[in-house]
Image (tube, rainbow, N blue to C red; front, side, top):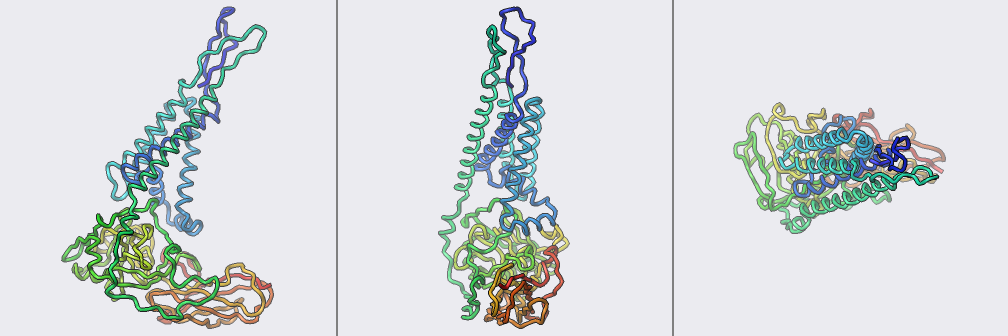
Length: 537
């Protein structure tokens, strides 16, 4: 509050005027609200460093927003922002928090109790979000409690009378009224200092949390045994040498990542275990060393995301290393009536894979490495599942800790509960990578190149046409197997000046031609022919 002299006072001559108080200006009050919010974030991050990063109020609310968002909104976010969707979500949360905090700061200038109650309510919302997460712990309540307590304390201090000056001396004879000195400035300085301290506290909490959960040394210490079943060498001509065409094997650093984890689970392999249970005769519990001792095999495989639009980037090929998942299921003894294997991540994500698919002869893995190195944390270290022929949402459980053999009626995994197809079979896809959309190319002969995949069925042919004309067969690179994509090239002869539309379609190993009709990714993967528009000039 700030004080001003009351010029209408009826005080006797020579007496000091009585002082009255009024609320700080809206801008200063809003700044006080922002300081309270900054304190909440800083205190929450600091407390989360001693509990779990997932319990941070912002992360808990963000995770709840992901879970509660309609499927269409999730699909739009992935398509619009790609792998930056989480950054956009967190940025939106911080922006909304700032706007609400500023409004509560203005409210606190008039009704401190109401504003404090609303800050407490938001803390309760964050606490609910943290405790509602799968695998939540009672201690997950602490970061939200610290955040709410810190915010209310700072708001009560900044919006209270403690920073208001005492009465100002009366006006000197012949002069105008004397205004109080610096009440707004005191609040601005106090709020600014609070924001700075909160930022330092939050940063320290995040650094401490990262250090406490750091598994880089444990990952570096992993010694991968040589595979008992190495992958055959790739054919020499497996990749087309065309500038702009992605490499046949995707570098690990470039491999796509699409998941719901706002904080990456960090698991020390020495403390990791995998439980296999449910409709099996012999439940199993194995550690990381036990997994390596099962005998590892290599698998070259193209993994793709169901969120991929036609021509989208969410596909990559790598050499996986891991233990045979079908062999482990047979060791456990799958009972009659079992229909799906539900994998659970350490962060509670569940992914269901049809048991029939796992036991039909394909080489599904409990993967521990990609491209010759232990899995990166963002790709599931220390263990994840890989099942050829299926999109990741029904086959790729990262940070795997639990496998349950069950029925479809007994359990709906995460994505199935949200309406996605239960089987997740990969659709046939072909993509024009060269030339890029809206590229300008010289007239004459133009090289067109791209990639096609229909995992576990393989690619038999790819065709290209220009401006709706006749389809032309492309030249396929060497076939490395049905579980891998296939690159192709075509020479467009006599390209004339003007704007042209190029289209591509593929035929899979069963002879089925990729359908023309465009459908969105939801609920079972996108279909349609990819096209690009180029200008010959």
